Image: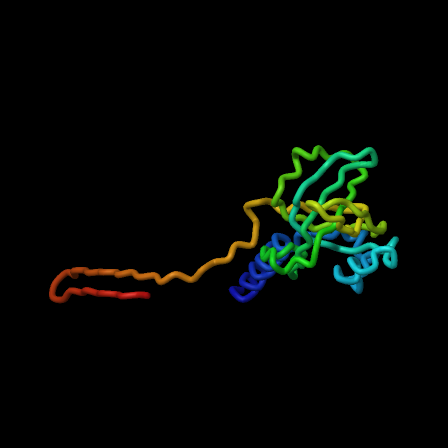
Length: 185
């Protein structure tokens, strides 16, 4: 009887854990459309060659502005980890790209530094000024945009030395007693 109850609880715990950990970044309906063979370096080199392809890109918001045809978000490309989340190391970036959201998003609500994962259709390239030089940005039309909350960023946890001391004692009825000392690092 105990074994059956244990198995039932095990199944419940497993299902709850699976439900909590299965946050979908890419909608199920878009997943079969995504071309995973198109990498960012190829996209930068020849965006016109991939026009119409659906790709998944990650990045950090640099700025956003309102256009007649929607909202343009400029992102610093960042590679994605296994959870489709952009990594935090900006030095791993391979450039910038523009994501065009056809619907209006108030640029004031798109905070600089926010990490995003974007499923988008490649629409070519746009040349614009980056400081004093012309820069050729690959452009994707947003099919799905996932914003990562600031509190869920990938923090680097630095190991720190830990030290603790525990002291215990006890008395018993009659003869005897007890004591203890623990030291941990």
